[in-house]
Image 1 (tube, rainbow, N blue to C red):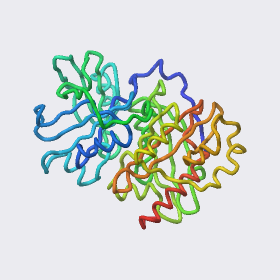
Image 2: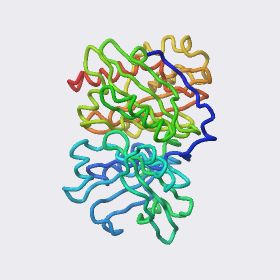
Image 3: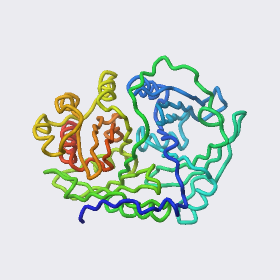
Image 4: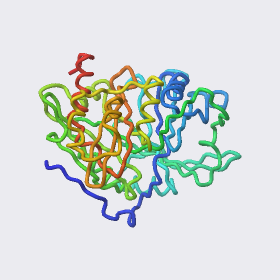
Length: 375
């Protein structure tokens, strides 16, 4: 399969599912209080809202942490034998909900279910003294869902039922801005089915695709296609394994997560040198590539604004496309299971996903797999 870069063809005008961006990403975790502390102290998120027994919830507690436009919801069950506890028992800590900000949650649900989406929850309304929020939910790959959130009639911090947290003395911001993209891993030969899902059910189009010639090392390979909505604000790369001599990172993920799910969130910054320096100081661990990666960096990517020596010190990767370049780096898994991790990315015109870095990145991941005994 040849690599293709496919620009969006003005589909915004006929977009039946207009999306304003990512509203929040909800993780189901074993201990939300501790997870919230980690994201505040390490990633610089600020605790902005809470819901739990003190607010009338009997089965769960949720902490909402935020930095600029990035909003994570960390939810834990208070008792066994419910859907949240079952999700954690099966998958470990992981992403349950990639919620999407819409102007009309009823229309979003109606249009997607009419096109074949499986409804998880029909439209419902939440109200408090701050206003009204309308929501609806459909299923996507594995046990992951998309909740449509319509919040233009709401003035509160997050959602009705959550109490606002006024101050956070733990948070140490690092300059993260918004969710650039969310990557999903699916099983063998399942990628095209979910490409079709995002195209036919949600009105996305192919943005880029990569085959096993693009994303491979001596030992392993994968295939990936990037789907984007009409205005390009929401991008979902979808990965599947490809044949290789040894177990790929996608196979390792599927084994430990027990099925398809979110592999990583890419968080954007306007100053990756400062952001990554602060993240390292605050204990975030990143994958490392060999120093030889930097020996001919400018020959590969051309002139860049940053000092190659500064990039080398932080182990940052660089790639260029026809519209500019990007800088990126990937954390080690943030759970004990080798599943979810984060990407930090700065775009300086570049719209791609770092194709030129795939080999170095995947060899770094394989070194980690070898240490875990999973390669």
